[in-house]
Image (cartoon, rainbow, N blue to C red; front, side, top):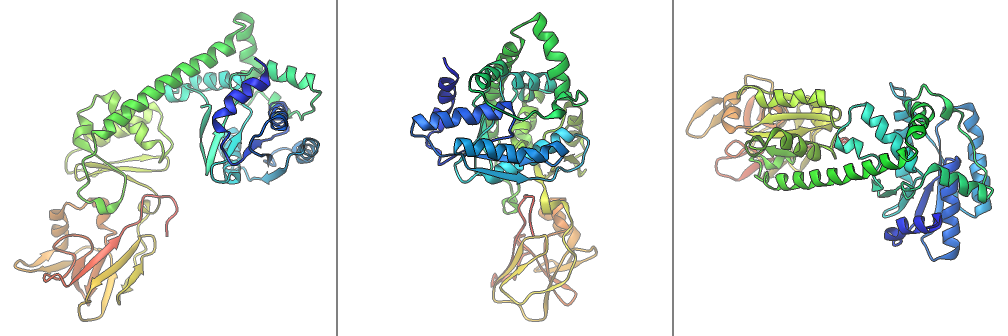
Length: 436
């Protein structure tokens, strides 16, 4: 089957996309992909094709690449957009450049559009080896998926079954010109070392090594899909609603989770946490074991890359974004209507406001509250009786008149007048990354 036919087969499920966007570095792989896409679109009614070049600014020689890409795109009649990015410094320049590149590419996609990248079968083999040496699990060893969600659209890698040798042959047959990245020869980078030093040796002994490794990645992808199916089934059995559902935080009940085997607990948590944070390596899972084993009156926390897992009220709670920072401790006047709380959602006084100068504040310690039929009670004890998770107690709004605590937002029996003619309602922040 010709390269064009194989590409068309990979693209056929995506023909309803409003547009196709090629990630165009100017190198061999993306040059072949762009040429193939234009060739197909000239013969068939397909979505419009455009290209995006991401300029990292990491090498002086790269300054000439946007002009080269523009030349190629002009010759092919393809619109080109150049995006300059800043690569954040860090331990891995490769990873930082990749993250900056994909962030820019995701930003380019309109709703439902498809981004096409030119990774091929040899790249997949490199990925498997790279992750194998890092001790990756099934998900990591499954390699690069053929497609996944990206921004408002999707990412597709239509050349994963094609070898680099086939791309080179196509480029030679069509007299294509491309840029060579000099950093590709620098074996201090792990992927280059695998490409230059390791894979050639493996191919001398096993000529089909790249094909076999790519096939192994496909098998592992299927195994991961089955593990995800199992996780979804287990999650369906953990549907017990939270007592404090108004927190709107991701949470899981602990009792049915503990009933699963250790392997199924980890599998479920990996699946549940994946959309919210980078997953920990195997050694870091001791944090989860410590969280489960902590005494019943303890307040254990498992800190991960993008948030924290807390245990409270018989559940696991995921906290991120504004929840990881104490709310701004200010005393705000409350005169009715909606009050925006810095870093802590918003507050409303429902019904007829009680008399007196009212203000909203947070717990400092030592507060007391008058309870009908019980007299004055220590607020700390009242919060303990309510079962409110400890991570909420320092940020739940209090309504005061002078020094008297009139209400604690959202807690039945504490959130308003005994007659029910007013109520303090708090809408907490969600567990997102950008909140005010």
